Image 1: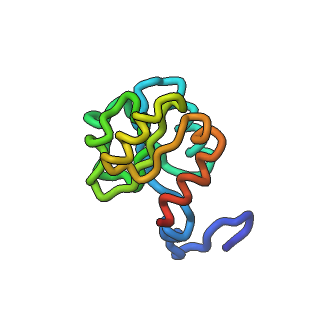
Image 2: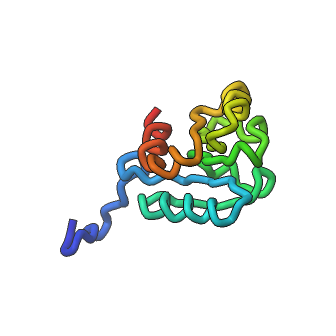
Image 3: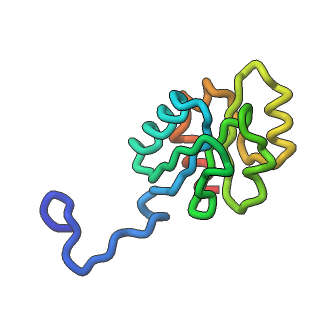
Length: 127
C-alpha cells in the first residue's frame, strides 16, 4: 500500500472474496423499501442493483439475491445457483413457509432484515 491507502503501481486489486464485496441484486417493487436496502448494502461496500422484478433483473451477474417474496414468486429466483435472502411481512407465516419450500436460502421478516441486513448478507455469502 502506498500513501493514504493507495495501491502501489502494478499491484492488482484484492479479489472480491478477500474484500467482502459482492454483486447483489435487490428485487423489490416497492421503491422506498428497495432504495433503503440498496443504500444499506452499498454503504457496506457491495455493488447493488435494484430491480422491480426478477424478469427485469440482471440475475446472471449476481452473487446474492435479496427478494421481497410477498411481491415476487420465490420459484422465479431459486435454482439459479445464487443464494437468496427473502423477506416478508412478519404477519404472514404461510408466505415464509412457501418461500422456504420453494428453496429460498434464508427467509426473514422485514423488521429483522432492517436490523440485521449486513450480517445476514455476510452469512449467506460465506456459506
